[in-house]
Length: 231
Image 1 (cartoon, rainbow, N blue to C red):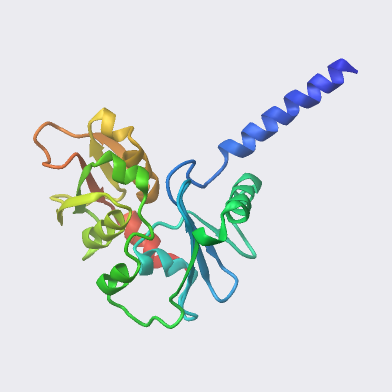
Image 2: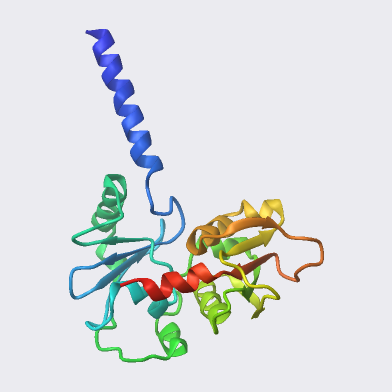
């Protein structure tokens, strides 16, 4: 009987670890999720701060939300979901355990603005990640996609997360995939790993004198394809 109980205990531990490691949501910092049932809603929260619900315009497609908001979308819930059971439990517990005075609703359902600057002003601070803010890293964003405005679009998202973008420009060469360049310590930082995941970057050690920023990002063609091919 003891052997059976021990086996079940070990099986439970391994099952939990498998589910935990397969989680798609950030383990710390800000998390943003789309509820795809119409009308679309966005939920965003961090570990310590308030929960914010955003009601979205009816004609907005779920795949275009990241571009519309200038903020990364980590997961979605609807008829299909990329969240496993651990992710869904985390979201459920966050909503259930947050006091009502820490829940805010912002109605964008009537918002027709196509001006990112006006929208960013309206949502100032909503998508800020306090862990990124606390690291005080400076970022250079270069467009290596061969498509116009990609550095500006990526820079907007990074700025809304709370990082300091000091340089926007074009890369001397085009790249199929994002490159994130920095020293080893910065690459391993929360900011470095978060941006690496958002933009699907490969890590490259930054050469001395290559950038005035702590971290350089070269946006690849794959990011443009992702933003244009989503339904």
